[in-house]
Length: 185
Image (cartoon, rainbow, N blue to C red; front, side, top):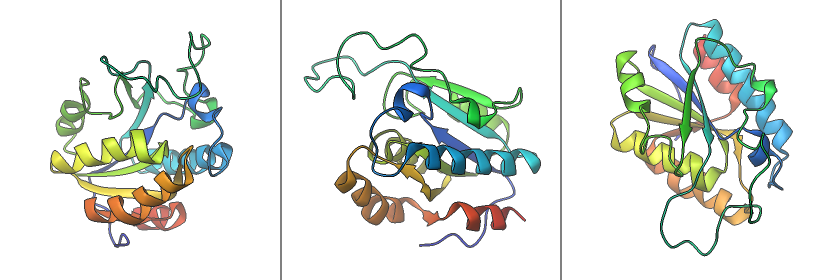
């Protein structure tokens, strides 16, 4: 279902737009995803709405033969740094996660509730991992969920397509960056 309205208490959540993740080979050019995320962030900030910037620094414990995407070993020192194009502002909410989703083991829900947020707009990388996990958790926490479908990408085309075509429409609404900016008014 396409978005027709954004709650006046919406927030933008950008998932894993960080140096190490944006350097991975993705289905859609990462620089385009970052640019759309940055446009959304600027639009949300201009209207005084919260912007949540999420980065990942770890992985779930336990048996995971697949390891971290992109290889094994120690990542570069700047791997988890947010890309500068996002123009992080002092009022932005920074969430550092160690799991796929932005809610597990973080204070994200409390930060959003404190601000009276009722709707979350998602963008980021990877569609089927961090974005989908966070959108599912947002839905389970009772938030209205919207995904900016041209502001997400994945390292796997089939996984991306599955999330966009099958999962996100069941969780809430989907829309383009331009249309969402238009809905902000």
